[in-house]
Image (cartoon, rainbow, N blue to C red; front, side, top):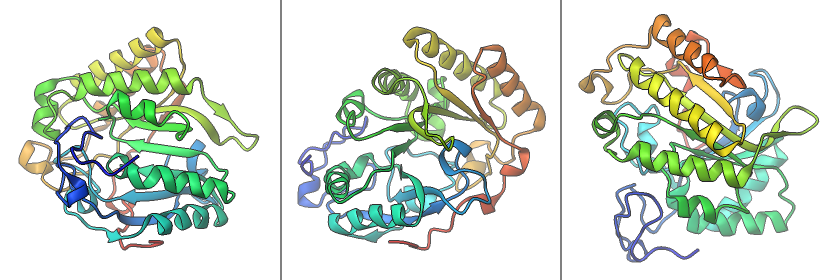
Length: 304
């Protein structure tokens, strides 16, 4: 995959000539930027194990993001450009270093804008002994064509389904087409990845996890998301894991958009009960204590 001259890797299709150093709407140009690469212990247990495990998910946080979420807990890297320039060869080494440290998988966080570096780095690392599964950690705003291009690259999709309401997605993420785009991408992920597969230690090696973060004051849209997730399961016939998240914390510009508080127990419980009633019972829910700033890793360029 070559560096785009008219970038269309993400649904923005902004057309930036990144081969000439132009910066896309995602914040990416012609230099690969990474903010952190370390064992992460706070993903779903089937990816990172229990919080006190010596191993974890080998998580690489990439700079930039196709979405512009006003409440992003990783805003320093997703929207403010924090990151260190590295080469494709260094990225390859990072993959292998994380495996040597005991990572159960490689967890690529918001990676789409950097696929021209990532895909060859993975190919070369595999030739040198990389064997752990690749997890694609995404906000769900992906082109179907990009998902298809990752057929032989990604083993596990860890994807959000944030909103159904187009006005809400426009207000909070500058993406009025979010639901339509996300649902098409999820449909493709499910069809090309299939049902969950685990190894003998209980770690997920193949499959799809769909996350939904319950937002304060928007419980009704959460119910619509759950309805659509249940419909996707029925339509595709492919089981997936559901991860209902309560960890919303009013970061970045959240308060300016009416998100100045955390989710109440009632709001979260209502969403979880709806998921159970819709048959989305295979997966995870969070404790309210997850809504704490210390659950966001420090972006101190560790491992880069």
